[in-house]
Image (cartoon, rainbow, N blue to C red; front, side, top):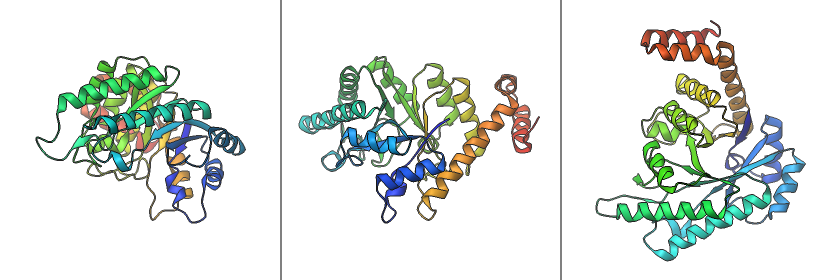
Length: 311
């Protein structure tokens, strides 16, 4: 598996910078890196990042856009054309940086494109604006994967791109070969989606460009260690990643606050490795045969088998 983890979990530690963070990644068994753009690279050129990654035997997966300041009332869908264009230019800048630093995926989460009140936005106008913006970014970067990460709320009361359904509609309307989706496990729980459902649909269409692994209780973006709150949902989710030969990076988007970041990443690696092995031990064909029975008792027996660790 290709694994990455959250840089900000380390940068909150006194004395930590990217160099120290990457050293801990290597120790924990992490092989890939996702950088927030521009916050993580403001003082580092792409060549400097490449040198730092090589020093710690890491590879760059890609960059994730972070919109701050002027964008709190919307990014690509902002009603002010000047701010919307500024957001679009930031996406292009992220593409340039990603390409030069050796990454493959540009992830765009629009945390501020949304609304808090009725009668606040022109929905169709924002929709058309987003479609055009994504088309522009895709055409600007035909050699890279442009990935939409959705979340139902936070930062806004209602996010505009909030679900697998809306994201699927966007992918259809954008209609570019290099547009896909990043699935964040806890974001899907917040929307009361079953993560495996989205993994099955987008995976079968080869539109799955990124995975953010974590866990939670479905109300907020808890960012718990994976498999700790909903282990069976996590197992089903991982099953569909294996079924469709997902070859991208699995990024631990977990939020250690009380927990030490190094040990938290290590347990995430151990947990996902163990769960992956449980699926391999039973076999994809066997698990599919249970699914095909469409029977709650047989599904429960499968979950019991996962507990026991063998057939």
